[in-house]
Amino acid sequence: MERQQRIALKVSDPERVFVGVVNEHFLSDNLSQFWIGFNGKTSEEDAYYIALYLGQPISKITHIAIVDSKEYYDGGVWYYFKTIIKLKEPIGNRYLRKYEVNWSLADFNLKRENMDELRNLLNKI
Image (cartoon, rainbow, N blue to C red; front, side, top):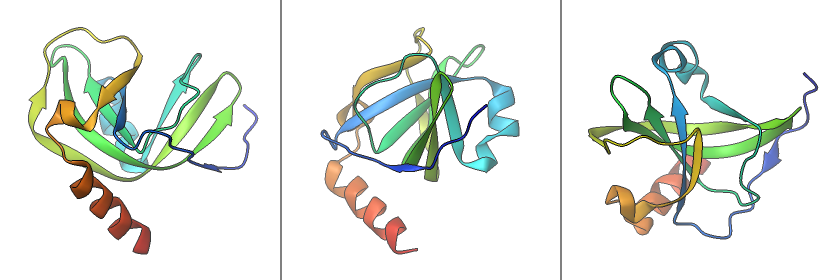
């Protein structure tokens, strides 16, 4: 797998949230590495946030990650996180595709101002 240099994000919609489906093995093996990879088609747009949908048997979004940068590889993209936030109450109870792009902070009852403040604080660390 040919690695490329990490690329800064170019976000046109600061409210956009990508949702990626993960399994419990991802949570236990990779979550501490602060990254997620998507094979195949991804969005042309970037987002500051990726929500992690834990597959069956939970079938809910359990975490939201704040994205730091991305890196393309053969056929996909890796997103690297600044931090990962566990939701108090998991969201949803429906089937999601492997990767969805049409979510916003409002879908998670999150305010842009609060998330911007958190991202800016993390940039200083």
